Image (tube, rainbow, N blue to C red; front, side):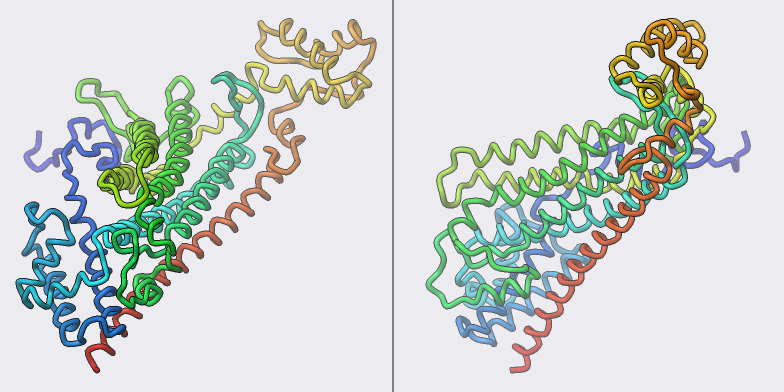
Length: 502
């Protein structure tokens, strides 16, 4: 072997024609060789944002003096700089991110000044707020990526409006359809999932800050100002509800994600099945498959398999979120601290799933000849022949069904229906003959199913146009919400500037 020959990182690398997709490898590897950060380390940017909004509100309401607020804001900026430079870390002895930051501020400006940061606030509403901000961001990213995945599926479907294939029921050949129709079903489901993500985002995007420890505060706070600084669309009003239902926001988001992952899991199973050499209908790009450490020929659809596992994890964690709330008394209960871990685990599992599937569908290859063969065998046109026979005679569908059932039995050896057999049975059993051929080619079969949502190329094309339009509209809605968050940050920066100027 040449000394200059590049060695693949994977032991199975020589099998593939292209290097593995790094995102797919990481998606499949999970936590095997990748550590997850502390839960509260993830929340640092959100806690800093929330602290700035809160202290600016306190100064604006004359609850604390402006000089004290400015010193606190400067200390927060110093923490932020050092944090992102990797010069400081969270101290487990200080319990959580909130106390870590407050102690850091106290070390810079003194405890008397730093102690004012927590005026009119509890760690209960503080934590509820920053976790909500984290979940909001995760939903936004997941939804944006899901829109892109939907568009990739729509594009692939539009290229296969006339690629006929046998549809399945009970894992058995059932009826003639097209891959365009099949993939359009994925896009339609993903679009509903995207709508759920958006609806969950909008339900979640209300501010619990100001609820304090469940029962409000006697300080003259301005919850609406703080909410605007944080990019929330409104205030979550009742202070007790804000804290009692800390689990609900997480469960809401988890439910929306679980629906999406369940649909991706169904898609994954289809890809596993149809890409098997025994079927040979689909071929996954080498970059999205993995090999074996012992069997040189393998091309394994690992990303699809781990999607099934990730889906189960998400579904069960969603159930756990609901379970944690069961039996809690109104007000804060420490049980709900674990809802933070569960929702973070959910997003850690699914974060890159839409992007992986988008890349898979952008590179997926379809064997049109094999697909056509499946649409021409195993009597998958039987129901359509029965329909045609009923249309061309005075027979009821059930009578036509019985004739075609017998025709299937008599044609078992050849594996396909023929017009002559059907005509002979019509003479024998019904004394009626159809007005024309009832057995036709697969593309003609799907062409007859030209109704809303049917597999006829024209019908699927119209469906795809609507799906594409709706996916782009949803993408614009997510973009609007992202811009709203950016404007909120600018609004807060301007409020801080005014505070310093005065």
